[in-house]
Image 1 (cartoon, rainbow, N blue to C red):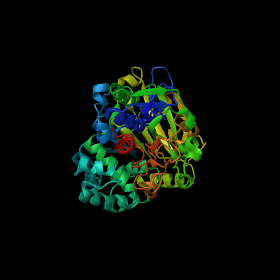
Image 2 (image 1 turned 90 degrees about the vertical axis):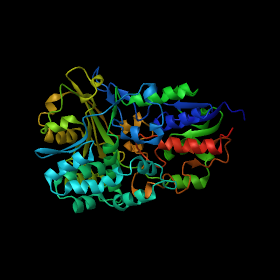
Image 3 (image 1 turned 60 degrees about the vertical axis):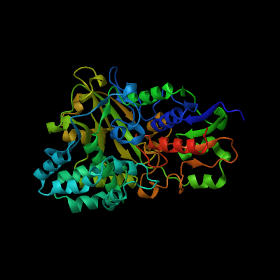
Image 4 (image 1 turned 45 degrees about the vertical axis):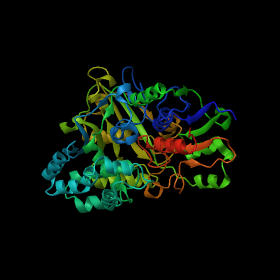
Length: 482
């Protein structure tokens, strides 16, 4: 076979682009094929509501962009990326007040002590276990299939992180503010809050807020994808948009194929070229819950009852820990809670390019069962109105995406699952199969070596690029030696 490229990457999401950059920086030829008309996948920005309002279609806030070794080692800023840090990373409205996670862990703890004596110590004890070791622990957590470089810090993290967040919140925190902050962070795992390891999600995200903040990309998340494409092209790589890969015949000859795809899509493309045993194994891969998303064009800032909330880039809207736990449990059981947990990002408060002068673009979503077609717009807006009376009066236009629309935007989001598969503890490391190299796809009947490089492999969902880097480096080591 005459190879046209050393490597072909299917999909120009963050993981696919990072994989391609790794290949190109090693001096190999690489082509990225993207079905959409522009690269980015989960990091795309569009005018979804009205002219002049720039909305992030999927991901909006990027703490991993500064913390992940796959991204922090790249010259993204030299290629046009500009990070914007909100005044505070996170606010969590409660009745008559808000819990606030500041950049400083000390300042956050002092706020919590004002709510309940001792909660500041609890915050330092729980979240501090992930803050104190710094990037060393983060790197171990983002490379779960390897010998840890900081085993003691990882063990300390695991002792608390392995527990359900409602258990830790109930035992460690006395006041509602600390419990609510913990619950909102844990809910990013998109599962019941009493499930094992949900505290680990809270610890990781809380630590990121204190270590690097929760930044957004100036001009929209598309800027991160554009910077990755710029780096790729600077090293001779190519990106071809509008090229959907539906079968093996849609691929040019290459030595390696790296697929930024879920196992479901991989099987659709490769079909009988995959060994029957491997097909059975990936057939057991579980997709997680979906999301229902709304973007709003507003005639002014959200009228939060507590003015502190306006200074936060991210707002967790869901009330107390008990309320969030109830909502997420109902969702995990296949229901649609009347009071869902809503993740809100108010990027335009800190980035004037996102909306016309004096107006605001708002982003938000809640969790729903996989494949749900229930319209959650009224319930989401009622939750925001609960903590921001008059919010609905500010709405100029809205854009709604149920799970079908989410999947239509990004084919990896099967049933609206933005994590590339269920993120529970049973499937955290064993995604998509139990293997020391779960990204390696056995293809004995094909000339090219195949690798998964999507969030369906460890370490899973999030805009961190580690899935792409892990797969690409293994391919370079085993398939693309000079």
